Image 1 (cartoon, chains in turn brown, purple):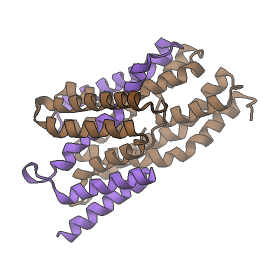
Image 2 (image 1 turned 180 degrees about the vertical axis):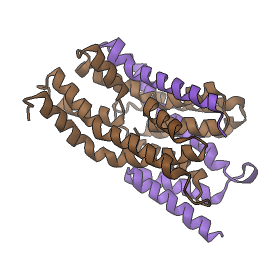
Image 3 (image 1 turned 45 degrees about the vertical axis):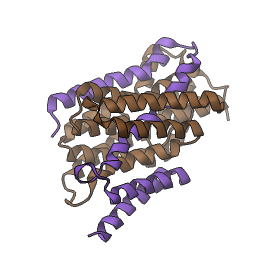
Image 4 (image 1 turned 90 degrees about the vertical axis):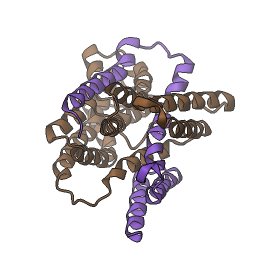
Length: 244
Length: 107
């Protein structure tokens, strides 16, 4: 269905983005709770969620800071987890690249799994959309998801200190990570990448300054890429769920 | 306890770094295609680094670096249900339930 106005494109984006509130909300809530347990106050939790808006990267940074890893390692690891947004940015550029710079600058800030997945699918299936309509749709998909992300981060920070002791929160983070990663295991190269990373990580814990994580991550990445070449798996730019 | 200076350094470092990752192509690179080998490696970053981060937390989860069976089985349940259902919430539910039941059962 072709859009007649940029306004209708925006509201179509809002509608399509609504279901993703159910994904973003619980993760933001969990981040708020765990960050508060780790000693962050509400202002710090909110700054984190507003400045970074990237769930998996925020969880990674939080875990490594609690392990007292060096700051450089914290940053490198969390950014590595977030490298996929560079891929999203590349995938959206053919559709949004001709928009004004200020719009692209704002769109970049809002580039998360959901806005990428929805935007890319829509632009591909509806080539008649104009660039302003695409931008409007894209911003629309972000509206509710981002409000949920910020609101639930706040709610998590607010209830974080009131949770009863005895809940095994130490293991909430590993479970959250595994639940994010499991649905990503779509092809054999993905499994190989994860398997190699796990084995190297377990052996490499002895390497100081948490460098083992970088070593293991790099090894897994190379194993996955190499396996893809050998196995000739279909290349794809998958939306990765369960993460903002 | 997390040091406050470190925390703010990480928040802003991660914020700026993530923004640059998001902006690079939309802002600077434009329509030029990426080299295939780079895209191929980017595809496996998350599935490599996240398991690498979790594996030691699961395997060395008990006293003095031993494996805590309750946490190990909770992790296995999360992963198994996650791969099987492709559903984040089913995975979290399975992991949390397994952990809760095993902690209760083992007193």
